Image (cartoon, rainbow, N blue to C red):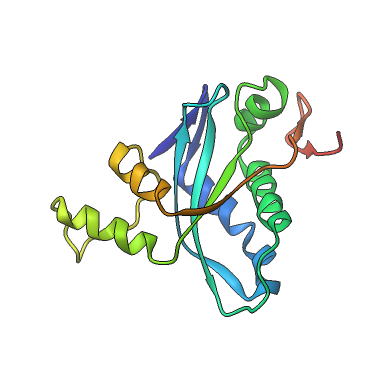
Amino acid sequence: MILCVDDELSNEVELQNAVKNVVDSMMPFDAHVTEYTSYVNITTISSHFVLFWEPSGKGSTPIPPSIFEDCCLTIEESLNILYLQGRASDKSIGPLEIRVVEIGTFDKLMDYRISLGASMNQYKTPLYVKNAPLIELLNSRVVSSYFSPMCPKWVPGYKKWDNTN
């Protein structure tokens, strides 16, 4: 599966690796992301990636919004050079968004997919959704939303980014 915002293409492996890059950010809160999926929100002036996250953990300290915002930026910085160019140079891609969903949301998603004929034994959480009813289900269970706090600076000719604005 390939996600596409504007003319930028990102594949599932790239997205999985980008999400893995933020795992350490949540460890001090004894939390992790149990499930996630993504979609491209084309309803905003600059389309942007949205990640639906279902965090879990036994930590008694709530995760501050700044941690989720840092996760957004870290994920953006982990994506390919075309994404960085569209996001930082061309401004054709909007800030990445994380929507935290209620615990049990991905069980509801699985139940919905099974009700449509998916096999329970072969069900796997999709890394990308584009079906309106699935997006509606996910959106109905959002408890908070966070955006990347800044734009990673893209330097033409370099594969490295610089987020000093």
